[in-house]
Length: 251
Image 1 (tube, one colour):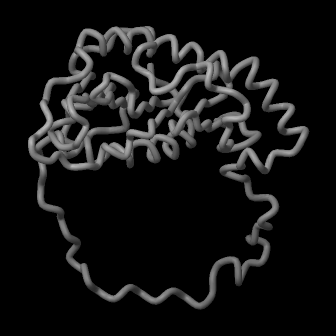
Image 2 (cartoon, rainbow, N blue to C red):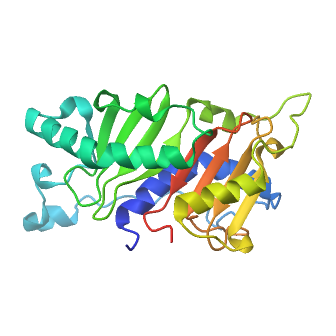
């Protein structure tokens, strides 16, 4: 399946949380390039817009698609449809994912219930996803035209990603071995990625994740300007996943 337009939205949300961590670990900091006209006064906005002169271009707010809907906003019919989808597609997808990362999770699959639903992104569209909050961890499941799958997870310990280490400095020993990471990737994706498409970095280099490890998977993950990875993960000092993200088409 080709990556859809919603992929960029979800991937951007996830990668914004990891961007500072990844860039700091690269140790390739460069001074920012400032535009020549920095500080110049912005151009004034025109008084009239296209929709002012072309009334037919105005779109009623009622027909604009919703990006998100809170669980509390669901009607009885929507709730019944969700509960059916939860039992048949969503919960089995989470259980499969939890089986892959067993021993590295901040919650158990049994904690996922319909009552933990927080919101739905792109409701009633082919690429809708459901967000759950379990014991402080946020997990998102995409139910696209193919099999449903977990595409995002952030544990409550994710806030530690942006904390700088203090004295004494945390050890740089990764909490998860390279062999274990490769095993997890194989079980998750069903394939073996070439070495140049896997970047494993100790999080203790630039954060307070004491002994954790960051993993990016995909073409160009070791390049100066890294594209969106197929998989992005951070393991904490206890070996549990702190953050997880994957694209719609990780193959």
